[in-house]
Amino acid sequence: MTDQESGKELLVPEVLPVLPLRNAVLFPGSIIPIDVGRKQSVRLIEDVVKLERPFIGIVSQRDPKTETPGHGDLFDFGTSARILKVIKLSKDNYSVIIQGIARIEILALTELEPFIMARVRPVLEVDIDASAQGTEADIRSMEVRALVQNVKETAKQVIQLIPDVPNEATTLIDSVNSPGQLADLISANLDLPLGEKQRILEEVDVLARLREILVYVNRQ
Image (cartoon, rainbow, N blue to C red; front, side, top):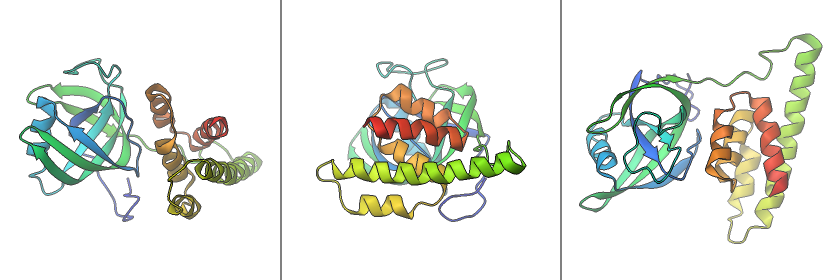
């Protein structure tokens, strides 16, 4: 698997510490701040930040009200993430800046204390032309190009209607050439219920994901 930022090969460890999210979904490529205050999560951050390469798994909870999630309380798909910065707000409260790296599937939770550890595997996107040949591949490629253009233009129209959004937002959209990265960028910024965002995260077929995102963008 390749790191989208550096182009270098990135290996996802077979076992990762898992940080559950209550009301959010992290997409590959996104950089977000999260508040960490639960006992398990605080212990995880304090342990992992000491490592040379602090990688964790970010997985959303099925029910945000669950205080101590365990087996069955987390979705099966999440995102491996790099910890960029940790800010200590108080004794048991941190603000953590994380960057999503790649989709992962949770195969099994191996530990619950002092924090969740899970056996994971990387989930690769379905190549746009992987399931097609000849004329069918050409048609899929044309549809992807059209969808990318349509998603970009519609997203920029939505941005213009939102107050206080910096002009750099439209420039960022224009600069993204990878269909998969564009889909994740737009998805991360859509105002959608957690379940719908999770479904987009789990859609590994780029073409199908672009179709779904265009529906959401048009709706907004």
